[in-house]
Length: 269
Image (tube, rainbow, N blue to C red; front, side, top):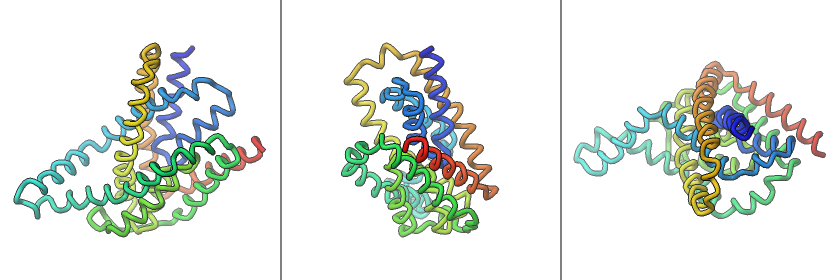
């Protein structure tokens, strides 16, 4: 049964991670609805998140490879003009990641204290719904090379809000990109490029705690099954998100978050 449950939780993580509906918020909701001890397993949450990380890394591998080569080539070769675009895009990723990094260090412990308050969770889903509704008709034209440092800073500041469970990280960043006039394709790319620094930092801290604890060894195979489930479902979930964004249907996620937020507020009042 544990094996099956971890697979189901991996599917839940993989499905909700790319979508603008907050994977952490859904895990908290399921925990409070079903009172499952497995949903308090921080080790598995790290493993499932790693599955999603690998999937998104796989999806964007060509872009990541190109950016890394261009970044270091710009620094260590004389052909700077050839790699200037890649170098600047890396700087935009760095700039967009700084605000949430600082906020995470300063505020995360305090925010975690309120993560189990279901009324706040419901309000967070409603907030996500409003954000997604605001960009329902967005038709930006900026491409990767048109993103400014001001855009990156605004998007990075908006990403800070996603530290609250129930407020989607991918949703807030996607909204920020669209509000700054980025095209749908450029918005999707920058949204998930910003995912990597944040995800790596949080997973790194979590893995250190997990190794020190050592209890994850006894659940190694269920963990691996959940990781694989998360990896596979994340790929399909991202592809679905991409189609919805390109077709201008983000309002569907807004409606979903609205209904979910109202349900939480009434059910847990």
